[in-house]
Amino acid sequence: MTNAALDRAKFIIFPPVIPYSALAIACLLQWLAPLGVVENIDLDWRIGLCATIVVAGLAVAAAGHRALVRHGTNVNPLRPTTALVTDGVFRRTRNPLYVGVSVALCGIALIFALDWMLILIVPACVILHFAVVRREELYLEQKFGDAYRRYRERVPRYFAGN
Image (cartoon, rainbow, N blue to C red; front, side):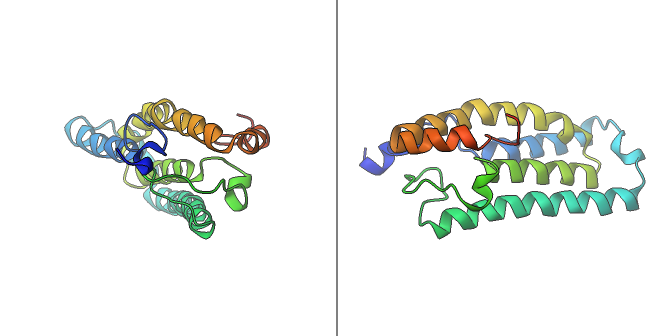
C-alpha cells in the first residue's frame, strides 16, 4: 500500500455513494409505492421555490469545491488532504459539499414529488455522518492537530448551533 493510500480518511463507504444511492432507492420506491404527499402542492409554486433550494445547495457545494481547489488540496476523498481550508464557505460549515448536496437533493425531491427522498435523506445523512464525516474529522485532527481543533471549535459541522 502506498503512502497516499494510507494518508486519507478511513471512511466506510465512498461519500458520493450515500446520497445518490438514497436518490436511486427513492425513485424506485416512488415508482413502486408512491406516497402522493408532495404532488398535492401547487406545481408552479413547488418548482419556483424548490429550484431556488436546488441552486442554493449546488452553490454551497460548488463554493466548497472551489475553495479546496484554490488551496491546492484534493477534492477527491480517496486522495490525501494537503491543506486545511478554513476560509470562504468553510467559515460557515466544515462540510459544505455534504451540506450542499443534501440541500440540493431535498429541492430535487420537492420539484419531482419524490416523497421517498424526503424520508430517505434522513438516514442517508445519518450514515454519511457516522461512516464518513466523523472519520474525516479524526483524520484531519491527526493530520493538522491544534489548527484543526481550533477550527472545529469555531465553525459548526453542518449548520450554526451543532
